[in-house]
Image (tube, rainbow, N blue to C red):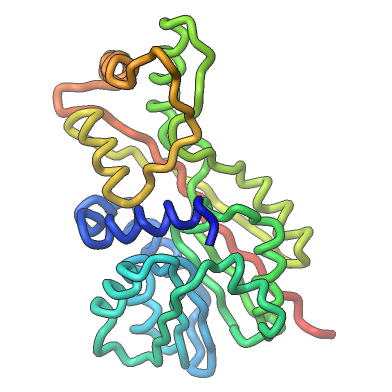
Length: 275
């Protein structure tokens, strides 16, 4: 497993054992909206869930009329939490500890699923185009891939505050946090992978936090603390962040706290039927 994947797994193991459930309101929203838009389950359907986390979506799937649910995640603690959440539900549930990009690419994989779903996970894919192709190969004819991920408008207030801070310090801006793809990029990759009837919808959701540090603590609490910014010799991170806090609160603060925007993007795409 690569160093990057090890870091991600450690982050999510810590968050599963810590504050994930407390801070994952947006993730619950995503799972609920994704589940509500799925086709009516058939008793003969087999489902694969990618990045099951602590089981928000797994529970909804397992309570439905699916024949089986295979729930995959990179972090052992997440799988343990999902197993506890779904204990006693009627579906046949199998939990798999794996990195989906390697797992789906294994040559022995066959088309064995009628539905593949994923919520708040695909933004972590290192090779999205290739992985989408492998996932299409796991779907039976007429099957569906449905996923929710974050759009580039996510945390726009944070990125604007950092940009203003770097400019005030006379420094070249760096990206703090993940970069999120445009929906049209996902759409093009899905079409190129051979999916049909590709459609998406996007929404913005504003969340209120008491302060910028509390917002960052919540983001870290759900495991999303990977940053593309490199350390700068001679520039103390404390000074950088304190200046950013001030600029964020000046522009986006209110008596009740600060707002942070999440852009949520929902996709559905189908495996063509054999003619």
